[in-house]
Length: 236
Ligand code: GLP
Image (cartoon, rainbow, N blue to C red):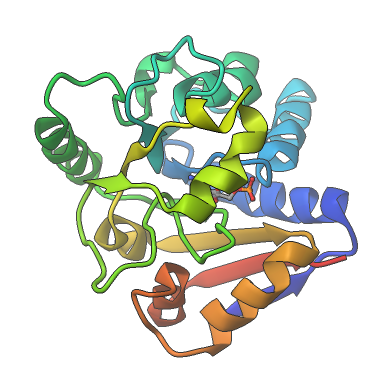
């Protein structure tokens, strides 16, 4: 495990963007696993800046996002597809057809989950998976549970996750109660994992996840078993 302490959010974002940028330079047609939430926004901003300077080329890059809310369309500004288009895809030279987010409007969610797992396998797996962490230790939307869910699945969001994400919606009732998320297996099979955590409210859960017992009650704790995990954090 590679633990990198950042001096502030800007430094955290730059360090994370450096790791992603190195991946793209070393393997221009790599598969990036991407994440949403407020934490990666600075990382994406930094990547866009370097793209504009001509330092990074996304033309061959493929992406798979971790998760999506059920019931939100790509043009809903709270959907994760919208987030990715806004924060990264529309600002760099990635081909939109090479970007993948679970379909929150799928007619059959079970089928969509199988499609997503198949897609990840067909792409040859993930080279680098970027992760944020929920305050309850969730990664993607893998919520605390009695067992680790291996494949892409439908989740009922935790009350604490709904509350934490309510800040992005007008009212808490608008926060979707279900989501589709990549499973623990796809995340653990990524060749490299980059976990980013920012702010004092992430300190306790990061300590639990990285140094406590490995348990599905703290989904991120499974990452202790990943052979190539980098964590960039700033708790100030
Ligand atoms: C959401 C996402 C996660 C993300 C988490 C933390 O629930 N599904 O992928 O890691 O929020 O978000 P933030 O970075 O805003 O704290």
